[in-house]
Amino acid sequence: MDTPKRLTIAMLKFQQLSAFKAVYELGTMTAAAEQIHITQPAISRLIASLEHQLSFPLFERIKGRLVPTARGKAFYFEVSKAFFALDSLEESARDIGTCHHGSLHITAFPMLSNSFLPALLGRFLKAAGSLSASLKSYRSEEVLRRTEIQSCDIGFALVDGFSPGPSVQSRRLEGDCVCIVPADSPLALKSSLCPEDLASAPLIRYEQDDSTQQALDQLLERHGVRCHDLLEVSFANVAATLVSEGVGVAAVDPFTALHAQQSQLNIAVRPFEPGLPFQFHLLFPSLRPISPTALAFSEFFLSEAAAAGIALRMEPS
Image (cartoon, rainbow, N blue to C red; front, side, top):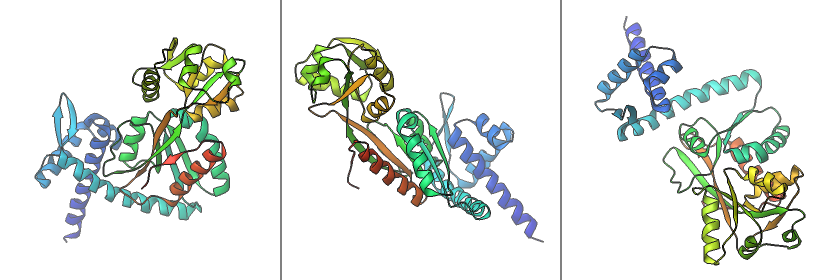
C-alpha cells in the first residue's frame, strides 16, 4: 500500500530538481516554465518547496534577475551529476538500439567553427565510422557557459583571464600570430616582418578590447613604432579580405591566415618577429568523465594543425 505514496514523492522530487536545473541554466522562471512545459507559478512552487526541504535558499533576486546563491551553485553541480547519469543511460540505450558507437558535440568560437573545424570534423567522421556529431558556433562566453552546464563534449573558447570552475577542465593552447600583406606589396618580398615594417603601410586594427590588438599595441610601443591606423574591424576574416583588396596590412591568428590562403585571397603570409602570441582554451565538462571520442578529437585537432603549419603549444597539465 505504500508504493504509490513513495512513487508520488519520488516524482515530486524529480520535478523539483528539473525545475531547479532549468531555472539555473536559463536564468528566468518564464524560460524554465517554457522549457519543461509547466506554468510559471508551478515553477515557483517547485523551487520554493525544494528550498524548504533543503533548508537553504537556491536563488536570490538581484535587479530583477535570479542569481544562484553559493549553496545553489554547489547544489547544481550535484544535481547535474545525477541528470548526466540518467542522460548517459539514455544515450547508451539509444546507441545500442541504433548500433551507433558514441557521439561528439563540439562548441567553438566563430573563427574556428567557420573555417578550420568543419573540414577537420569531416575528416574525423570519415575515419570514425558510425558516430553522431554536432558543431555549433557561439561567442566564447557562451562556449564556456555551455561547457559549464555540461551540454557539449569539447569546447574551444577565447577567454581572457580564464579561471575554470569545478565544472570545467581547461587546457590553454598558444600559437603565434602572423602578418598578412597584399601579395604585390614590397613587404611580401621579406621572409619575416618586424614592428618597424608595420610603420611602412596602413594598418588594419581591431577593437580596443581585442586581446591581440592590445598585445600588438604594447609591442609597438616598446619598439617606439607609430603606425598609420587606417581603419578598425571586429573580425580577423574581415581584415584578411581588406588586405587582399590592397587596403593595408594586418596581424591575424594563424587559422584565419590559413583560411585566407585556402580561399585564394590575394595575400602573402609572413611570420612576425618578435612573436605575437595567440591564445585560446580547450574546454571539457568535468562533472562526467571526458569521453574517449572528445580526447581523440582534441589530439586530431593538434596533429592536423601541425600538419597545416600551425604550431600550438599546450600548457603543462
